[in-house]
Image (tube, rainbow, N blue to C red; front, side):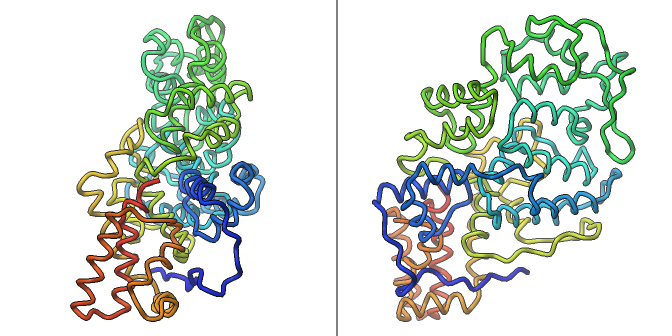
Length: 469
């Protein structure tokens, strides 16, 4: 099992950080929780001292992943993964790799957006069954995470995993398959009731021509494409596979329908379900004005006061919760997958995420994870508590001793130190009461101080303060 690095919490005598105004600290803490995977109080204070808008710019400053040396690891994983169809293959090591990347990345907003696009363009290994194709799609989503949505749509249309997932590889002019055309409009760009069944039929004809080979590689055959006239959303022409994105984005008879739909889905992921109309209008307006630049849409959201002010509103997804815990407690990365794993491979961090109802590379269907209340059902909530308890036990003795020594050996005083690491600026009264009840009972039972200190961490990890963002 992995170890936890002995990174000490901030203690008296640490380099001083001038405390910014409390309102700015809370805004920045919320930003890190929503646009990343959380941050400790020291990082929050340093960022808040720069100002909220400057922190937004910093989060958005990631260059395309394909241009960076750190993407070589992802490329090597893809290169080494099996290309042929395999039912026996386990994606567990690659799920763990992605959780590790979320936990350690220098660019948390990029990884958060990659997770969002994985849910938006949901594709599952259970049907694709080609590890190399799934990892290639993961790289594609990351490379376009903050790029241009138009280009992302065109790239995903020709992506091998997506072609297999929605039967685009069998869509030919002699027998068009409508699956991708329908989902491209309903789930990826326009939303329900913004197109007709005839638009789907015509889009299916436009998308014809792709196949995949035995290695799961996408191939385009001009002779399999229907090159006749097609009318999509009222626009007639000899449309091809890459024209449909332009039609839905620029030529919908009702205007920028796609901009509003895509903005709503992203706001629902980073912010909350059913965002305020003013928020969506600001996002969609910035999106269209920037020719569908994703960062422009995201920035419009992050700078809205509705986004940055107020209490936590949305329960963290399992991947956010697990990766955030790993990030804040410095859980060491597992070895990079190097050989073909089978189903016997086991990783309890991955299993915990799966038990909470989010199996990476395996969304439940083409609509992706619904989120919200799904993350709070009875089984998923119990899995969160179990994960919190397991992490409480995994913290190294040295780390616990450091916290306990800083609290002068008194477990009752360790909560502020753990809070400092977890980025919790305050606690709800119910959490304070639960901590007090636990400490009273464990003190009366003369429980070992180290165990009580671990128990405090467990309760904080299981609290609504840490689980909501």
